[in-house]
Amino acid sequence: MKTGEITLRPHRPDEIDALRRIERNAHERYRSLEGFGFTLTAPAIAPERFSTGETLVAEVDNRLLGYILMQPIDGLNYIASIMVEPDLSGRGIGAVLLAAAEEKTRQSSLSGTVLATFRQPRWNGPWFRKHGFDSILEAMIGPGLRAILQRHATFLDMGTREMLWKPAR
Image 1: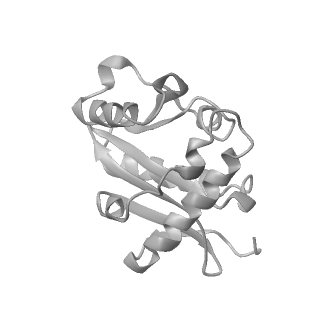
Image 2: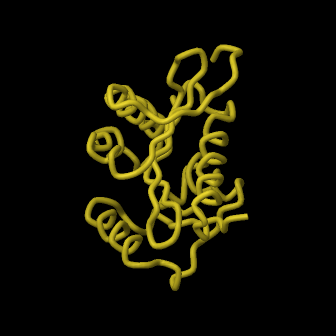
């Protein structure tokens, strides 16, 4: 990564293929993990999903580094996808994107930020927990979030998944 400052901005429709490539690249991190082989063959996020919410891209010197797709669901700011180029992992890009989601939560007067993620590896559940996320209470899962979990259950082992949230501050 160059030494320029990370900037965030709304995605442009002509960048959707590049954002989907970032996701495919990010999935390569799972290659050496037992039980995650399916992530290597899973299709990238559908292009139309980028129009279901707000997508911010992180960039330095016009290089796309990652993105976050979020949308309000059940009074919470749902992170549908957060991805960073794997060769840039550990450089704070994900934290910048996550902070933007939390700021969006506050600006929108939503009660918190929420996402569904794998319990492991370290860049999933443990990473979000390190950033103050915790298990969501069952009573807080409204019909929109429940529909997401039901959709995930059609293609993922839900024993490996968790829904985490962080209240707005």
